Image (cartoon, rainbow, N blue to C red; front, side, top):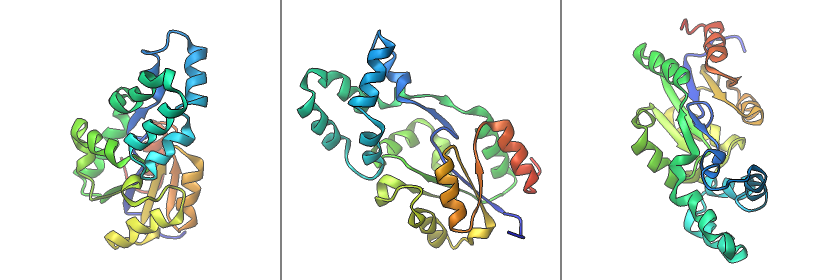
Length: 204
């Protein structure tokens, strides 16, 4: 690409919010090995991603409780205590976002996120409600790195792919953004992100 980006597109989970179900389940299980078994065999990443694809938590929980009735309370906690899966806002990333906003840099988000839980997240962390535009996977039944989810943001807001830089903690999602013509950065921490954005001309 020859031109520098003018617009920044953020992922949310593990870029702006530090999310991991272990934050919740360490308060439920005394045994780390038992917790890891539960998260790999019961409330698995594959199970959770279906909520990001649009399945309701009510349906997801009912499906698992039918198979593991003796773990009903633990399964229901994923839904009922979901805010505890987020330990904190990643302050360095939020500082970058707020600096970009103060400088009138257009800022958007594309996130794999349950529609239900993103509504909760917006109430808990109001800064999520002030992007210039956002695509939430659960609302559109599209998941990164499907090219369609990136194009949905671009088409909805009249953005040119080459004008945008996308930031994500997942390499495959970064590659997905590049495949549709966006600049893209693999997020490993706020300081590296700041340096990467400076290299692209944002002067943070």
